[in-house]
Image (cartoon, rainbow over all chains, first blue to last red; front, side, top):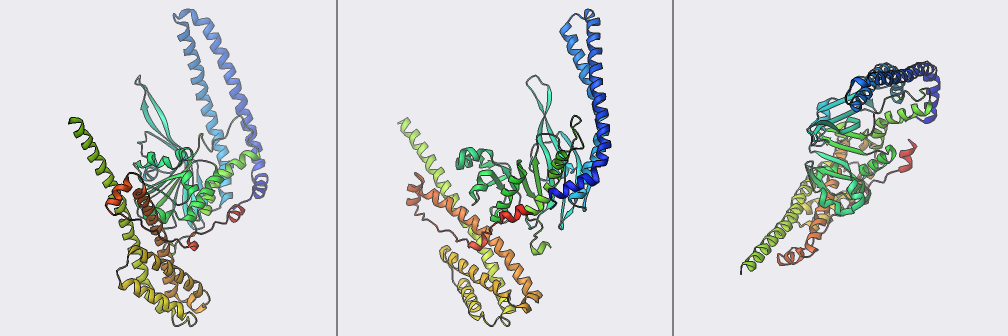
Length: 319
Length: 185
């Protein structure tokens, strides 16, 4: 596993000179955006003052003006940011991926396929909007793995009949082979209820579309996760005492909610995030080690998952 | 009269629910024990080939080999209840563990493809057995809790449901995690 010191060397030797050029581009775009918003605001205020008398409902006209500013600005913003973001990803994310492991490949515009997401059966609700990017794939210590950023949403209607979208999953989605054979379906979810209610939570959790609730013999694991499976014995074959301990450590290290499923002979890991992951921020300096370190740590989840869950220690018949 | 009938119907429904609950717990134990039993038999089937492949080389472990064979014969010949089977399983796991450690001292055996194949099969089977034992123990715990809790215990007494004992899980199967090592990486 790469150390922080080696990342620092890599940052200053391989990235820093080019990041300085990119920083100039960022500053130019940022100042252009600031000027744009300023001019747009002035234009709108002038337009409002001159034209307000032509409108019967002034408030409606004001809202129209604000919508105009927001609409035009977001068009310009997205147009400018797209190019900057692509450059940043080529320079930082792509390089970091090969730094984490030369056997990994990065594809900016690709993602985990929708059928793989659905195959995991982690999120059973129908997806109406499926977005993904930044796919990283390859093999580490003989374990084939791929992951990408995903954002899935479902359509809803409010009481007025207006449509809106709710997020089903946002975060990193990993698909990997597992080191044991299995034929059943097993699911691990974060257990928010048991942390507060204790064992009484089992009553509420007994009925779930994912299968039978599995009570495990590791109290700490039971407190943090709830497990469902179609096979009591195979679930425990997958979740050996050692595996449960490793998963607790992994979650502690990552510090985010993790959901895992074992279906179709594969292991699917969903690491939940609240916001986009590999998107550079236009208002922040890009030639900044701390920022690069954050991205490195996120990409490094792939190594943590393989090493900490010991996926490379395959049972002999899978070698 | 009408209210008496309502109480009677409610009482009957409660008894039926309680009875079904106890039966489901009992069947769950029997069901999982079926899987444990199948895996134990699979392990017993593996033993003759394993012993045949190592006995010539292992001159100093004749006693262990004999003991394993006797235990297997004992388990295969008689119809054993869960408690006896659990005891045999525990002893067999210990003996096989000792044997596997001893194999390490014989370079000839370690180079033998057949022995290694059998050893790896056994390790894999032991993992499956460990999972089955844990599932069985959980089912037994649920069953034991059910027959001891009020008011199910009254019905359980009437049905002569008895407490069942769990399988002992060998300490070696609870692999200790080297936390420091993990973070060092």
